[in-house]
Length: 621
Image (cartoon, rainbow, N blue to C red):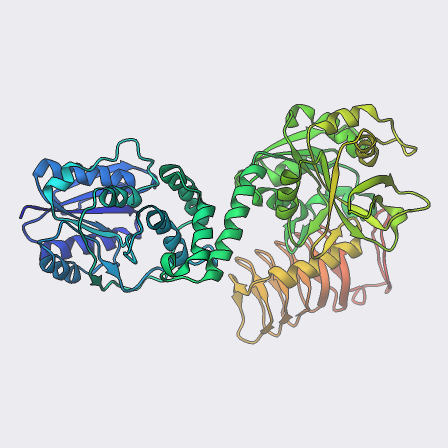
């Protein structure tokens, strides 16, 4: 019979060799067939086939290749073998199945090996495929165990004429084809077929859930109903997955849907102030861009907002505003948009909201103090706020010295009933840590309050204004650690926590063979570790550094770019960029500001400790 072999492929430099190999195999086993490629991604070049149709530079789902290849087979009056253009299928197997089933209308082989997990998720890919197929099983009581194998043989030319994909969303793809077959009561053969093992796919989990929502619309059935049916009748719905897999996917899908709501929020980061508690470093470096594990504190804050899908972020800036703009930029490195909002002087957190009204508009938003750091991020906090219907939400943590903080008092139900700013006689030990979520009602509250005794518009007064008028404020306790990095000892503590949790062993520079490196140590590009040096992780060393010879770098040390440490010992210390330590001494528990030099006084006269220090410095000799 006249036959079309149609390949569908997302082409890239990496995948092109796979497609070329499959084309060669197709020609070998089906020499008289017409070979047609429907490709998206990279434009195919010099493919030895009868026809190439490039339909998109992006991956847009599987419906379009069905339209293209069905139309080509229809024009030629031919049967169609449709194959994914990866290297998973074996054409000798395809030929075997074809020869054994020529009298069948449609052949959908069942794979002996399936994709087992996503490369960007711990979710089971096999379970996701079972749930996709669940829409067909619910509607048609389907018996096939694997109806989406990436290989379909339509051997009835009249059947091809009756297929239509007009108006079908691009992400529905194979399910639309199978739905038409099953609705027509078409006879389907399902022989076993061997494929090459594939254990990883780069499919993005958010794309998977986006596709599920389009499949929902096509079938008129909710994805959550499919998951519930799979739990109730696993023997019917689950063929290569477990009930635990379904629980994991349900949690991930709920989180995905919630994040879609959160993504409509805006972010407001407060990065003004003088950073007086961190002087003299903050005379020249704005406190929010002091590095923790060689990354500015502000970057961690932006990452937390970007992680929940927030795209528009305003940063309130004051002193050193040009420095922040230079370091942070326009937000493109996080795939967000950043707008800078200038505050003439520190006038309180509520004042920051007032001057940001034009940027915020009427949108819900998260306000994040730019010198705060959380281990667990803000995803759960933001999602709970959107689901609560509250006018505001705050994160709380118990503290031993509550008089230093804004405090929240809760009733027996855990609801916020009172807020105070640094009271002399605290009624609560639950401190507001500096991360808030608000509806637009907060703008009116901020405009109605008066400055406090310290001359600032307090955010606690604005939230109390909401409470006094019967509006709801929810709260949540911090999970994991939280740190306000406003003091040097707090910087060192959070540096230790981050190094403990995030340091990965990577060496991009050169290391002399007569060195000893133990633990998790990250060494940057073009850095050189000289003879006789000992490094014990967790430690991070930036780019273009020289360490050694005869030097010890101990745990919980972060060394910035373009630094030099020679003949000295450094431990539990943060060194900013462009520093040099050649002191022959042991330096611990220290924060060394940018472009600082520490040398030995014993080689010069008169002997003694020589200091050049600024205001508010601390020195231990």
